[in-house]
Image (cartoon, rainbow, N blue to C red; front, side):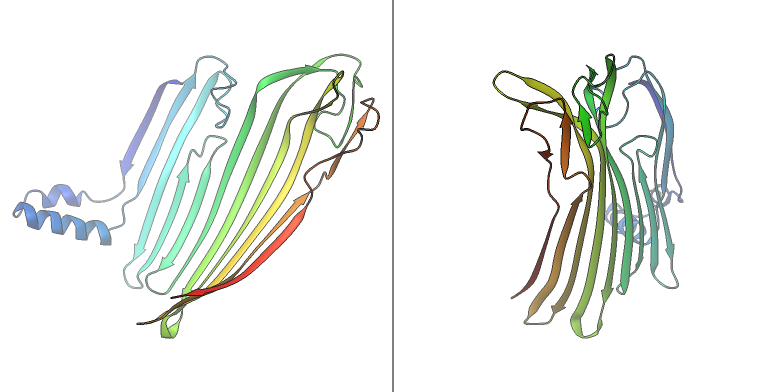
Length: 269
């Protein structure tokens, strides 16, 4: 990528510049640190970038694969309510790209906190496939099932949502819970073969993964305890691949099976 331009502006008073005109250097450092801790600082960055040539490998994990103009957008917006000690943060990274991330945090200092995070992770396979395979990316595929050759660019994308909550309780206790869902879809290279025959196939990916963790902790003068639950659940909407016209005895072909796991734990010191 070339000729990219960003314009960033901090959305806050230039307290450090003002402080630099008064007082001795040690006092300046202390005052600037205090201002940084209690003064919300927001940033917003916007611009544009241009890719001059198609390049499948250059944008494998970002989506910057095709020649053209792309928007650049990042931000970190912060707001603090002094009367309640509540902070609100809204963060965005690579918003114009396929590997974007967004996060919202809300926190009341010393009391409770919550966040919601979204991220997308792409993987654009850096090869173009020319094949007569029918129903590319499907759960049933036919070797040489298409009347003519066709070109395909395979890819997968994973969308991840994470929700977290935390609360400080009386008598030294605190509670936290975190839930995450990942949805991965797309297709990638696969195949079947023997010593004499190799057939090109695609792996039809349709995964759904859930994770849940909850903890209850205690912190005292001479005792610390942490107990919790952690569980996962993986589901594959395509548990097998049916191959028509392939190697005899090698259809259907097993794909990753669904599974569940959980754990209860308690530790202390």
